Length: 347
Image (spheres, rainbow, N blue to C red):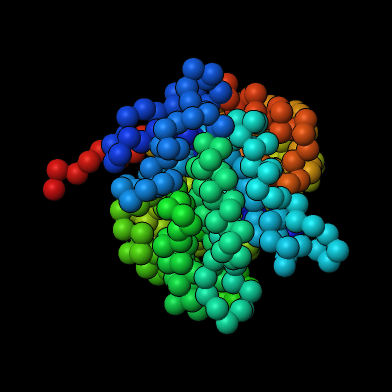
């Protein structure tokens, strides 16, 4: 994730849940025959959107075309001095118009404040409701600092329990990248595993997403960034994997600064490291302000080649309109199938 706000990008799919049972799954992100953002889908039949019978959070929330928004983008208290927030509730309509299926929204930020909880709950609730009104799912994400695991767990629990007028988040994702609080990489890895185990206890059987450094970055670009990243230990604790594969951060002479090769190699390495060739992966692409049309075309081709369930570029505020339009058309045509929720247990 870029250190500008420490955030990530994302993509997501729209599925329809009737009551607690999945009755229809979008087979193509851009299919005009299927209910899409902005259309009437019967009380925003989004599983966790409205009502008491909210069902479980499913892995399907991480599929399709996604858009990323961090707290610096929507919270006036965090915006640069003298500037209005880059993203407001009205921008969600534009996301829907561009075929976005899931909004990845930073729901909490640890800035050392005394209180532990969601960032600007009223604003957060407004964005959540508006997204559901537009037919989008919302995945809340949080960046743990790892210095105080009890505190990190409390932030995640607050997001897990957050509700506004009956609307809840459709998924949660943990951004695993912070190193400053724990400099020793072995201790840091141990803490990440412990934290992930505790978060798994909080969310139960709900699907949980992991936002992770790109394997190429860890194994090729900067082997000292996080030696011994605990892939195997984390593998059973998360259901969807979002690699921060920012090819725009690579130098041209490295041979890694292109959307296709960097994305495909990251997905291949990730599945090998996890020991799961069928791992549900949503690669996050380059930084929005630096992508080119050629980058994006190669990136989308890589999503198809690797059977990725979704795709996105970080982040919506920095992505220019031509790039938004290109992604809208390309992702809608490329991502043909959504991840399937796990079969009901016989137990």
